[in-house]
Image (cartoon, rainbow, N blue to C red; front, top):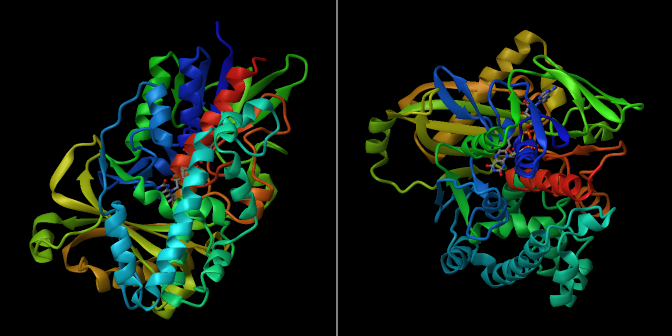
Length: 493
Ligand SMILES: Cc1cc2nc3c(=O)[nH]c(=O)nc-3n(C[C@H](O)[C@H](O)[C@H](O)COP(=O)(O)OP(=O)(O)OC[C@H]3O[C@@H](n4cnc5c(N)ncnc54)[C@H](O)[C@@H]3O)c2cc1C
Protein backbone atom coordinates (compact mmCIF):
# COMPACT_ATOMS: atom_id res chain seq x y z
CA UNK A 1 0.00 0.00 0.00
CA UNK A 2 1.19 3.54 -0.81
CA UNK A 3 2.13 6.07 1.83
CA UNK A 4 -0.80 7.93 3.36
CA UNK A 5 -1.40 11.67 3.06
CA UNK A 6 -4.01 13.61 5.02
CA UNK A 7 -5.00 16.95 3.48
CA UNK A 8 -6.70 19.58 5.61
CA UNK A 9 -9.01 21.72 3.43
CA UNK A 10 -10.26 21.13 -0.10
CA UNK A 11 -9.19 24.52 -1.46
CA UNK A 12 -7.44 24.64 -4.81
CA UNK A 13 -3.98 24.18 -3.17
CA UNK A 14 -5.01 21.07 -1.25
CA UNK A 15 -6.87 19.57 -4.19
CA UNK A 16 -3.97 20.15 -6.59
CA UNK A 17 -1.53 18.54 -4.14
CA UNK A 18 -3.99 15.68 -3.55
CA UNK A 19 -4.50 15.02 -7.27
CA UNK A 20 -0.73 14.83 -7.96
CA UNK A 21 -0.14 12.58 -4.97
CA UNK A 22 -3.10 10.33 -5.79
CA UNK A 23 -1.98 9.74 -9.39
CA UNK A 24 1.47 8.93 -8.03
CA UNK A 25 0.15 6.11 -5.86
CA UNK A 26 -0.32 7.85 -2.50
CA UNK A 27 -3.42 7.10 -0.39
CA UNK A 28 -4.99 10.53 -0.18
CA UNK A 29 -7.67 11.61 2.34
CA UNK A 30 -9.02 15.17 2.15
CA UNK A 31 -10.90 16.68 5.10
CA UNK A 32 -13.19 19.57 4.23
CA UNK A 33 -15.26 21.65 6.60
CA UNK A 34 -17.81 22.83 3.99
CA UNK A 35 -20.43 20.81 2.12
CA UNK A 36 -18.66 21.44 -1.22
CA UNK A 37 -15.04 21.46 -2.39
CA UNK A 38 -13.08 24.50 -3.63
CA UNK A 39 -12.96 26.97 -0.74
CA UNK A 40 -12.60 30.46 -2.30
CA UNK A 41 -12.49 28.72 -5.70
CA UNK A 42 -15.72 26.85 -5.16
CA UNK A 43 -19.39 27.63 -4.98
CA UNK A 44 -22.09 27.75 -2.38
CA UNK A 45 -25.84 27.69 -2.53
CA UNK A 46 -28.29 30.41 -1.58
CA UNK A 47 -32.01 30.46 -2.42
CA UNK A 48 -31.55 27.39 -4.59
CA UNK A 49 -28.93 29.13 -6.77
CA UNK A 50 -25.23 28.42 -7.08
CA UNK A 51 -22.86 31.36 -6.46
CA UNK A 52 -19.06 31.41 -6.71
CA UNK A 53 -17.52 31.66 -3.25
CA UNK A 54 -14.80 33.97 -4.54
CA UNK A 55 -12.82 33.46 -7.73
CA UNK A 56 -14.45 33.99 -11.12
CA UNK A 57 -11.52 34.65 -13.50
CA UNK A 58 -8.93 31.94 -14.15
CA UNK A 59 -5.37 32.39 -15.43
CA UNK A 60 -2.70 30.06 -16.78
CA UNK A 61 -5.14 27.98 -18.84
CA UNK A 62 -3.74 28.95 -22.26
CA UNK A 63 -1.93 26.28 -24.27
CA UNK A 64 1.23 25.37 -22.28
CA UNK A 65 0.07 27.83 -19.58
CA UNK A 66 1.18 27.37 -15.97
CA UNK A 67 -2.09 25.81 -14.84
CA UNK A 68 -2.80 24.06 -18.14
CA UNK A 69 0.53 22.22 -17.88
CA UNK A 70 -0.40 20.88 -14.45
CA UNK A 71 -3.85 19.78 -15.64
CA UNK A 72 -2.29 18.10 -18.70
CA UNK A 73 0.02 16.07 -16.42
CA UNK A 74 -3.11 14.96 -14.53
CA UNK A 75 -4.90 14.22 -17.82
CA UNK A 76 -7.67 16.64 -16.89
CA UNK A 77 -9.57 18.59 -19.53
CA UNK A 78 -11.62 21.60 -18.62
CA UNK A 79 -14.17 23.44 -20.75
CA UNK A 80 -13.02 27.04 -20.83
CA UNK A 81 -13.71 30.26 -22.69
CA UNK A 82 -10.78 32.53 -23.48
CA UNK A 83 -11.91 36.12 -22.82
CA UNK A 84 -10.94 38.72 -25.46
CA UNK A 85 -12.32 41.51 -23.30
CA UNK A 86 -12.15 40.32 -19.70
CA UNK A 87 -12.62 43.59 -17.86
CA UNK A 88 -13.49 47.27 -17.86
CA UNK A 89 -11.86 49.33 -15.14
CA UNK A 90 -13.99 52.37 -14.33
CA UNK A 91 -12.25 55.46 -12.95
CA UNK A 92 -13.80 58.80 -12.01
CA UNK A 93 -13.25 60.35 -15.43
CA UNK A 94 -12.48 57.44 -17.76
CA UNK A 95 -12.87 53.77 -18.56
CA UNK A 96 -10.00 51.41 -19.39
CA UNK A 97 -10.98 48.29 -21.31
CA UNK A 98 -8.60 45.39 -20.82
CA UNK A 99 -8.09 43.31 -23.96
CA UNK A 100 -6.11 40.15 -24.54
CA UNK A 101 -4.86 41.24 -27.95
CA UNK A 102 -1.59 43.20 -27.58
CA UNK A 103 -2.29 45.63 -30.44
CA UNK A 104 -5.77 46.43 -29.15
CA UNK A 105 -4.43 46.84 -25.61
CA UNK A 106 -1.67 49.21 -26.72
CA UNK A 107 -4.26 51.28 -28.60
CA UNK A 108 -6.39 51.32 -25.45
CA UNK A 109 -3.43 52.59 -23.40
CA UNK A 110 -3.07 55.50 -25.85
CA UNK A 111 -6.78 56.30 -25.73
CA UNK A 112 -7.20 55.88 -21.99
CA UNK A 113 -4.12 57.83 -20.93
CA UNK A 114 -3.80 60.53 -23.63
CA UNK A 115 -2.10 63.06 -21.31
CA UNK A 116 0.99 60.85 -20.97
CA UNK A 117 0.57 58.31 -23.74
CA UNK A 118 4.26 58.01 -24.62
CA UNK A 119 5.46 57.53 -21.04
CA UNK A 120 2.63 55.11 -20.26
CA UNK A 121 3.52 52.98 -23.29
CA UNK A 122 7.19 52.87 -22.24
CA UNK A 123 6.19 51.98 -18.69
CA UNK A 124 3.93 49.22 -19.96
CA UNK A 125 6.57 47.84 -22.32
CA UNK A 126 9.03 47.52 -19.46
CA UNK A 127 6.37 45.96 -17.24
CA UNK A 128 5.63 43.41 -19.98
CA UNK A 129 9.30 42.58 -20.42
CA UNK A 130 9.68 41.97 -16.67
CA UNK A 131 6.42 40.01 -16.56
CA UNK A 132 7.74 37.67 -19.25
CA UNK A 133 10.92 36.93 -17.29
CA UNK A 134 8.92 36.35 -14.09
CA UNK A 135 6.62 34.01 -16.02
CA UNK A 136 9.60 32.00 -17.31
CA UNK A 137 11.09 31.71 -13.83
CA UNK A 138 7.69 30.61 -12.45
CA UNK A 139 7.35 28.08 -15.27
CA UNK A 140 10.73 26.61 -14.26
CA UNK A 141 8.88 25.33 -11.18
CA UNK A 142 11.09 27.08 -8.62
CA UNK A 143 9.56 27.17 -5.15
CA UNK A 144 10.82 29.92 -2.82
CA UNK A 145 12.55 30.04 -0.41
CA UNK A 146 14.98 27.44 -1.75
CA UNK A 147 15.77 25.02 1.07
CA UNK A 148 16.50 21.91 -0.91
CA UNK A 149 17.57 20.91 -4.43
CA UNK A 150 13.95 19.87 -5.20
CA UNK A 151 12.77 23.46 -4.65
CA UNK A 152 14.78 24.59 -7.69
CA UNK A 153 12.56 22.75 -10.18
CA UNK A 154 14.06 23.29 -13.67
CA UNK A 155 15.63 26.59 -12.63
CA UNK A 156 19.26 25.42 -13.25
CA UNK A 157 18.42 24.49 -16.87
CA UNK A 158 16.61 27.82 -17.30
CA UNK A 159 19.65 29.73 -16.06
CA UNK A 160 21.95 27.97 -18.50
CA UNK A 161 19.78 29.09 -21.43
CA UNK A 162 18.95 32.54 -19.98
CA UNK A 163 22.04 33.59 -17.96
CA UNK A 164 21.16 37.30 -17.90
CA UNK A 165 17.55 36.90 -16.87
CA UNK A 166 18.19 36.42 -13.16
CA UNK A 167 20.63 39.35 -13.09
CA UNK A 168 17.95 41.54 -14.67
CA UNK A 169 15.32 40.40 -12.19
CA UNK A 170 17.80 40.84 -9.33
CA UNK A 171 18.12 44.54 -10.22
CA UNK A 172 14.39 45.03 -9.66
CA UNK A 173 14.00 42.72 -6.66
CA UNK A 174 13.57 45.55 -4.16
CA UNK A 175 11.42 47.75 -6.38
CA UNK A 176 7.76 48.49 -5.82
CA UNK A 177 5.41 49.26 -8.71
CA UNK A 178 5.57 52.91 -7.68
CA UNK A 179 9.37 52.83 -8.18
CA UNK A 180 8.87 51.85 -11.81
CA UNK A 181 6.29 54.64 -12.19
CA UNK A 182 8.92 57.03 -10.83
CA UNK A 183 11.49 55.81 -13.34
CA UNK A 184 9.06 56.71 -16.14
CA UNK A 185 8.11 60.03 -14.52
CA UNK A 186 4.58 58.83 -13.94
CA UNK A 187 4.51 58.75 -10.15
CA UNK A 188 2.17 61.73 -9.94
CA UNK A 189 -0.04 60.78 -12.89
CA UNK A 190 -3.28 60.11 -11.02
CA UNK A 191 -5.31 58.16 -13.65
CA UNK A 192 -2.58 55.53 -14.08
CA UNK A 193 -2.05 55.28 -10.31
CA UNK A 194 -5.80 54.72 -9.81
CA UNK A 195 -5.94 52.09 -12.55
CA UNK A 196 -2.94 50.19 -11.17
CA UNK A 197 -4.22 50.42 -7.58
CA UNK A 198 -7.57 48.93 -8.59
CA UNK A 199 -5.88 46.06 -10.42
CA UNK A 200 -3.28 45.40 -7.74
CA UNK A 201 -5.60 45.33 -4.76
CA UNK A 202 -7.40 42.37 -6.35
CA UNK A 203 -4.28 40.66 -7.71
CA UNK A 204 -1.60 41.47 -5.11
CA UNK A 205 -3.75 42.43 -2.09
CA UNK A 206 -1.97 45.79 -1.81
CA UNK A 207 -1.41 49.02 -3.77
CA UNK A 208 1.41 50.47 -5.91
CA UNK A 209 3.25 51.91 -2.91
CA UNK A 210 3.81 48.44 -1.44
CA UNK A 211 3.30 45.87 -4.21
CA UNK A 212 6.57 44.19 -5.18
CA UNK A 213 7.29 44.99 -8.83
CA UNK A 214 8.33 41.49 -9.91
CA UNK A 215 5.21 39.45 -9.09
CA UNK A 216 3.05 42.49 -9.90
CA UNK A 217 4.55 42.76 -13.39
CA UNK A 218 3.17 39.30 -14.16
CA UNK A 219 -0.18 39.94 -12.45
CA UNK A 220 -0.72 43.17 -14.40
CA UNK A 221 0.28 41.81 -17.82
CA UNK A 222 -1.03 38.23 -17.61
CA UNK A 223 -4.20 39.22 -19.54
CA UNK A 224 -2.18 39.19 -22.81
CA UNK A 225 -1.53 35.47 -22.23
CA UNK A 226 -5.23 34.93 -21.62
CA UNK A 227 -7.85 35.09 -18.91
CA UNK A 228 -10.56 32.49 -18.74
CA UNK A 229 -14.10 31.76 -17.78
CA UNK A 230 -14.41 28.12 -16.74
CA UNK A 231 -17.71 26.58 -17.87
CA UNK A 232 -19.98 26.42 -14.79
CA UNK A 233 -17.49 28.57 -12.86
CA UNK A 234 -14.07 28.03 -11.24
CA UNK A 235 -15.77 25.62 -8.85
CA UNK A 236 -15.64 23.23 -11.80
CA UNK A 237 -11.82 23.24 -11.65
CA UNK A 238 -11.97 22.27 -7.98
CA UNK A 239 -14.57 19.64 -8.83
CA UNK A 240 -12.44 17.93 -11.50
CA UNK A 241 -9.42 17.84 -9.18
CA UNK A 242 -11.59 16.26 -6.47
CA UNK A 243 -12.91 13.74 -9.04
CA UNK A 244 -9.31 12.83 -9.95
CA UNK A 245 -8.48 12.15 -6.29
CA UNK A 246 -11.54 9.89 -5.95
CA UNK A 247 -10.81 8.17 -9.29
CA UNK A 248 -7.37 7.17 -7.92
CA UNK A 249 -8.91 5.68 -4.78
CA UNK A 250 -8.65 8.78 -2.55
CA UNK A 251 -11.32 9.90 -0.10
CA UNK A 252 -12.86 13.33 0.34
CA UNK A 253 -14.70 13.84 3.62
CA UNK A 254 -17.10 16.77 3.19
CA UNK A 255 -18.74 18.50 6.18
CA UNK A 256 -15.88 17.11 8.23
CA UNK A 257 -13.98 19.95 9.94
CA UNK A 258 -10.61 19.03 11.39
CA UNK A 259 -10.51 19.72 15.12
CA UNK A 260 -6.98 18.61 15.92
CA UNK A 261 -3.66 17.72 14.36
CA UNK A 262 -1.03 15.97 16.45
CA UNK A 263 2.42 14.48 15.72
CA UNK A 264 3.20 11.14 17.37
CA UNK A 265 6.91 11.12 18.19
CA UNK A 266 6.99 7.34 18.60
CA UNK A 267 5.31 6.24 15.38
CA UNK A 268 6.49 9.38 13.50
CA UNK A 269 2.99 9.76 12.11
CA UNK A 270 0.47 12.57 12.17
CA UNK A 271 -2.93 12.07 13.73
CA UNK A 272 -5.85 14.00 12.24
CA UNK A 273 -9.12 14.24 14.14
CA UNK A 274 -12.10 15.33 12.08
CA UNK A 275 -15.86 15.10 12.46
CA UNK A 276 -16.35 12.14 10.13
CA UNK A 277 -13.02 10.35 10.21
CA UNK A 278 -9.87 10.26 12.30
CA UNK A 279 -6.64 8.43 11.54
CA UNK A 280 -2.82 8.43 11.32
CA UNK A 281 -0.98 9.68 8.23
CA UNK A 282 2.61 9.58 6.97
CA UNK A 283 2.32 13.10 5.54
CA UNK A 284 0.01 16.04 6.21
CA UNK A 285 -0.75 19.05 4.03
CA UNK A 286 -2.52 21.98 5.64
CA UNK A 287 -4.47 23.99 3.05
CA UNK A 288 -6.92 25.63 5.45
CA UNK A 289 -4.94 28.76 6.27
CA UNK A 290 -5.94 28.02 9.86
CA UNK A 291 -3.53 27.10 12.65
CA UNK A 292 -3.76 23.78 14.51
CA UNK A 293 -0.85 24.60 16.84
CA UNK A 294 2.51 26.39 16.57
CA UNK A 295 4.14 26.02 13.15
CA UNK A 296 1.15 24.35 11.50
CA UNK A 297 0.08 27.40 9.45
CA UNK A 298 1.43 30.67 8.09
CA UNK A 299 -1.54 32.29 9.86
CA UNK A 300 0.67 32.02 12.97
CA UNK A 301 2.71 34.93 11.56
CA UNK A 302 0.08 37.30 12.89
CA UNK A 303 -0.08 39.44 9.75
CA UNK A 304 -3.50 40.89 9.18
CA UNK A 305 -5.52 39.66 6.24
CA UNK A 306 -8.30 41.34 4.29
CA UNK A 307 -11.92 40.42 4.71
CA UNK A 308 -14.36 40.27 1.81
CA UNK A 309 -17.85 41.67 1.55
CA UNK A 310 -19.95 40.43 -1.33
CA UNK A 311 -23.32 40.70 -2.94
CA UNK A 312 -24.87 37.67 -4.62
CA UNK A 313 -27.71 38.86 -6.83
CA UNK A 314 -30.07 37.54 -9.47
CA UNK A 315 -31.47 39.75 -12.28
CA UNK A 316 -34.39 39.24 -14.67
CA UNK A 317 -32.30 38.39 -17.72
CA UNK A 318 -34.60 39.06 -20.66
CA UNK A 319 -35.79 42.49 -19.53
CA UNK A 320 -32.30 43.52 -18.48
CA UNK A 321 -30.67 42.45 -21.72
CA UNK A 322 -33.34 44.27 -23.76
CA UNK A 323 -32.71 47.42 -21.76
CA UNK A 324 -28.98 47.13 -22.27
CA UNK A 325 -29.72 47.36 -25.96
CA UNK A 326 -26.97 44.97 -26.98
CA UNK A 327 -24.27 46.89 -25.14
CA UNK A 328 -21.19 44.67 -25.23
CA UNK A 329 -20.39 43.78 -21.65
CA UNK A 330 -16.94 42.71 -20.52
CA UNK A 331 -16.75 39.60 -18.31
CA UNK A 332 -16.11 41.82 -15.28
CA UNK A 333 -16.16 45.45 -14.13
CA UNK A 334 -13.76 46.91 -11.65
CA UNK A 335 -15.08 50.20 -10.30
CA UNK A 336 -12.41 52.31 -8.60
CA UNK A 337 -13.80 53.97 -5.50
CA UNK A 338 -11.42 56.97 -5.23
CA UNK A 339 -14.30 59.32 -5.93
CA UNK A 340 -17.10 57.27 -4.39
CA UNK A 341 -19.45 58.54 -1.67
CA UNK A 342 -18.23 58.80 1.94
CA UNK A 343 -20.20 55.72 3.03
CA UNK A 344 -18.26 53.54 0.58
CA UNK A 345 -14.91 55.19 1.27
CA UNK A 346 -15.18 54.58 4.99
CA UNK A 347 -16.29 50.98 4.63
CA UNK A 348 -14.13 49.50 1.88
CA UNK A 349 -10.66 49.60 0.36
CA UNK A 350 -9.96 49.28 -3.34
CA UNK A 351 -12.34 48.64 -6.20
CA UNK A 352 -15.78 47.05 -6.49
CA UNK A 353 -15.42 43.92 -8.62
CA UNK A 354 -18.55 42.73 -10.49
CA UNK A 355 -19.31 39.90 -12.88
CA UNK A 356 -22.44 38.89 -14.78
CA UNK A 357 -22.80 35.18 -15.47
CA UNK A 358 -25.41 32.58 -16.28
CA UNK A 359 -27.50 31.40 -13.33
CA UNK A 360 -27.19 27.78 -12.23
CA UNK A 361 -29.37 25.94 -9.78
CA UNK A 362 -27.97 23.64 -7.07
CA UNK A 363 -27.59 20.80 -9.56
CA UNK A 364 -25.62 23.05 -11.91
CA UNK A 365 -28.44 23.36 -14.47
CA UNK A 366 -28.85 26.70 -16.24
CA UNK A 367 -31.87 28.83 -15.34
CA UNK A 368 -32.66 30.51 -18.62
CA UNK A 369 -34.45 33.67 -17.59
CA UNK A 370 -32.02 34.75 -14.91
CA UNK A 371 -28.60 36.27 -14.79
CA UNK A 372 -26.32 36.14 -11.75
CA UNK A 373 -24.43 39.22 -10.62
CA UNK A 374 -21.56 38.73 -8.19
CA UNK A 375 -19.89 41.61 -6.52
CA UNK A 376 -16.98 41.68 -4.06
CA UNK A 377 -14.94 44.27 -2.20
CA UNK A 378 -12.13 44.34 0.36
CA UNK A 379 -13.09 45.28 3.91
CA UNK A 380 -11.37 45.35 7.29
CA UNK A 381 -12.13 42.13 9.11
CA UNK A 382 -11.39 43.28 12.61
CA UNK A 383 -13.78 46.22 12.29
CA UNK A 384 -16.63 43.99 11.10
CA UNK A 385 -16.01 41.29 13.67
CA UNK A 386 -16.12 43.90 16.46
CA UNK A 387 -19.71 45.00 15.61
CA UNK A 388 -22.61 43.88 17.78
CA UNK A 389 -25.23 41.73 16.03
CA UNK A 390 -27.59 44.66 15.41
CA UNK A 391 -24.88 46.99 14.17
CA UNK A 392 -23.53 44.19 11.95
CA UNK A 393 -26.94 43.76 10.30
CA UNK A 394 -27.37 47.50 9.84
CA UNK A 395 -23.88 47.92 8.34
CA UNK A 396 -24.55 45.02 5.99
CA UNK A 397 -27.75 46.64 4.75
CA UNK A 398 -26.11 50.06 4.37
CA UNK A 399 -23.09 48.75 2.49
CA UNK A 400 -25.20 46.62 0.13
CA UNK A 401 -27.22 49.72 -0.75
CA UNK A 402 -24.16 51.93 -1.18
CA UNK A 403 -22.44 49.38 -3.46
CA UNK A 404 -25.56 48.92 -5.59
CA UNK A 405 -25.72 52.72 -5.98
CA UNK A 406 -22.11 52.77 -7.24
CA UNK A 407 -22.82 49.92 -9.67
CA UNK A 408 -25.91 51.72 -10.95
CA UNK A 409 -23.67 54.58 -12.15
CA UNK A 410 -21.94 52.14 -14.50
CA UNK A 411 -24.62 49.65 -15.49
CA UNK A 412 -28.31 49.74 -14.68
CA UNK A 413 -29.20 46.75 -12.51
CA UNK A 414 -31.46 47.93 -9.69
CA UNK A 415 -34.72 47.84 -11.60
CA UNK A 416 -34.10 44.26 -12.75
CA UNK A 417 -32.99 42.82 -9.42
CA UNK A 418 -34.92 39.80 -8.23
CA UNK A 419 -32.88 39.75 -5.04
CA UNK A 420 -29.48 40.68 -3.64
CA UNK A 421 -28.01 38.90 -0.61
CA UNK A 422 -24.96 40.21 1.19
CA UNK A 423 -22.04 38.04 2.31
CA UNK A 424 -19.67 39.20 5.06
CA UNK A 425 -16.59 37.94 6.94
CA UNK A 426 -18.98 35.68 8.86
CA UNK A 427 -20.15 34.15 5.54
CA UNK A 428 -16.50 33.38 4.71
CA UNK A 429 -15.95 32.02 8.18
CA UNK A 430 -18.79 29.63 7.49
CA UNK A 431 -17.91 28.56 3.93
CA UNK A 432 -14.11 28.91 3.80
CA UNK A 433 -13.34 28.37 7.47
CA UNK A 434 -11.67 31.76 7.94
CA UNK A 435 -12.75 35.40 7.93
CA UNK A 436 -9.41 36.62 6.51
CA UNK A 437 -9.19 35.70 2.83
CA UNK A 438 -6.96 36.52 -0.13
CA UNK A 439 -3.59 35.55 1.41
CA UNK A 440 -0.80 37.93 2.43
CA UNK A 441 -0.15 41.10 0.42
CA UNK A 442 2.61 40.68 -2.17
CA UNK A 443 4.93 43.22 -0.53
CA UNK A 444 8.70 43.02 -1.05
CA UNK A 445 9.05 41.27 2.31
CA UNK A 446 6.35 38.67 1.59
CA UNK A 447 7.18 38.10 -2.07
CA UNK A 448 10.98 38.49 -2.25
CA UNK A 449 12.76 38.75 1.11
CA UNK A 450 10.77 36.25 3.16
CA UNK A 451 8.47 34.24 0.90
CA UNK A 452 6.41 31.72 2.84
CA UNK A 453 7.59 28.22 2.13
CA UNK A 454 5.37 25.20 1.49
CA UNK A 455 7.72 23.45 3.93
CA UNK A 456 7.02 23.80 7.66
CA UNK A 457 9.25 23.46 10.71
CA UNK A 458 7.59 20.08 11.47
CA UNK A 459 8.54 16.75 9.88
CA UNK A 460 6.34 15.74 6.92
CA UNK A 461 3.96 18.68 7.34
CA UNK A 462 3.46 21.03 4.37
CA UNK A 463 1.54 24.30 4.09
CA UNK A 464 -0.18 25.11 0.79
CA UNK A 465 -2.65 27.64 -0.58
CA UNK A 466 -2.84 31.40 -0.95
CA UNK A 467 -0.72 32.04 2.17
CA UNK A 468 2.29 30.13 0.77
CA UNK A 469 4.62 30.96 -2.15
CA UNK A 470 3.83 32.13 -4.83
CA UNK A 471 0.89 33.86 -3.09
CA UNK A 472 -2.71 34.83 -3.68
CA UNK A 473 -5.04 33.67 -6.48
CA UNK A 474 -6.16 30.31 -7.80
CA UNK A 475 -3.17 29.88 -10.11
CA UNK A 476 -0.65 30.54 -7.33
CA UNK A 477 -2.54 28.44 -4.76
CA UNK A 478 -2.59 25.58 -7.31
CA UNK A 479 1.16 25.95 -7.92
CA UNK A 480 1.88 25.78 -4.19
CA UNK A 481 -0.07 22.52 -4.01
CA UNK A 482 1.96 21.12 -6.89
CA UNK A 483 5.23 22.21 -5.22
CA UNK A 484 4.33 20.41 -1.98
CA UNK A 485 3.32 17.23 -3.84
CA UNK A 486 6.59 17.31 -5.78
CA UNK A 487 8.63 17.50 -2.55
CA UNK A 488 6.74 14.55 -1.03
CA UNK A 489 7.06 12.47 -4.19
CA UNK A 490 10.80 13.24 -4.56
CA UNK A 491 11.72 12.77 -0.89
CA UNK A 492 10.17 9.49 0.13
CA UNK A 493 9.84 9.20 3.92
C1 LIG B 1 -14.08 37.46 -3.24
C2 LIG B 1 -12.89 36.79 -3.86
C3 LIG B 1 -12.72 36.87 -5.24
C4 LIG B 1 -11.61 36.25 -5.84
N1 LIG B 1 -11.46 36.31 -7.20
C5 LIG B 1 -10.45 35.64 -7.78
C6 LIG B 1 -10.38 35.54 -9.21
O1 LIG B 1 -11.26 36.03 -9.93
N2 LIG B 1 -9.33 34.84 -9.74
C7 LIG B 1 -8.38 34.22 -8.96
O2 LIG B 1 -7.46 33.58 -9.50
N3 LIG B 1 -8.44 34.29 -7.62
C8 LIG B 1 -9.46 34.96 -7.01
N4 LIG B 1 -9.56 34.97 -5.66
C9 LIG B 1 -8.51 34.30 -4.85
C10 LIG B 1 -8.62 32.78 -4.88
O3 LIG B 1 -9.97 32.38 -4.89
C11 LIG B 1 -7.92 32.19 -3.66
O4 LIG B 1 -6.63 32.78 -3.53
C12 LIG B 1 -7.73 30.68 -3.76
O5 LIG B 1 -8.90 30.04 -4.21
C13 LIG B 1 -7.32 30.17 -2.39
O6 LIG B 1 -7.09 28.78 -2.44
P1 LIG B 1 -6.48 27.99 -1.21
O7 LIG B 1 -5.82 26.78 -1.76
O8 LIG B 1 -5.65 28.90 -0.38
O9 LIG B 1 -7.72 27.46 -0.36
P2 LIG B 1 -8.98 28.19 0.28
O10 LIG B 1 -9.86 28.64 -0.82
O11 LIG B 1 -8.57 29.17 1.29
O12 LIG B 1 -9.69 26.96 0.96
C14 LIG B 1 -9.41 26.49 2.24
C15 LIG B 1 -10.35 25.35 2.52
O13 LIG B 1 -10.11 24.86 3.84
C16 LIG B 1 -11.36 24.55 4.43
N5 LIG B 1 -11.23 24.56 5.90
C17 LIG B 1 -11.03 25.63 6.71
N6 LIG B 1 -10.96 25.22 7.99
C18 LIG B 1 -11.09 23.88 8.00
C19 LIG B 1 -11.06 22.87 9.00
N7 LIG B 1 -10.90 23.15 10.29
N8 LIG B 1 -11.21 21.57 8.61
C20 LIG B 1 -11.37 21.23 7.32
N9 LIG B 1 -11.41 22.15 6.33
C21 LIG B 1 -11.27 23.45 6.65
C22 LIG B 1 -12.30 25.63 3.92
O14 LIG B 1 -13.66 25.29 4.06
C23 LIG B 1 -11.83 25.74 2.47
O15 LIG B 1 -12.52 24.87 1.62
C24 LIG B 1 -10.67 35.55 -5.03
C25 LIG B 1 -10.86 35.45 -3.64
C26 LIG B 1 -11.97 36.04 -3.06
C27 LIG B 1 -12.18 35.89 -1.58
